[in-house]
Image (cartoon, rainbow, N blue to C red):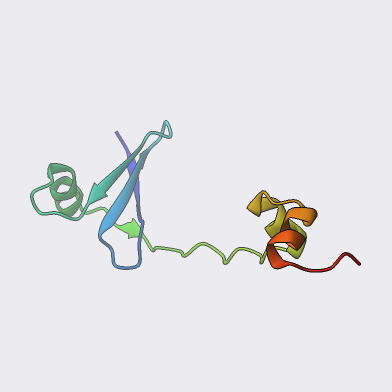
Length: 83
């Protein structure tokens, strides 16, 4: 079976192992873990960790929707006068 390996974090504490069928396993870099020992002994290398991009900031409307409050409830909560 052929595997590809990728570091899951910048600290290189966990490997992601994927086979040609798309099956994925996460392997801690623990010398007591047989899968990590197999990785170390097989001569394979792992692709570098790539941090995910920063998410776009939420708009005021998205924040309000995420809160579950209506505009009226928010006004009441903040005790703002009606426009």
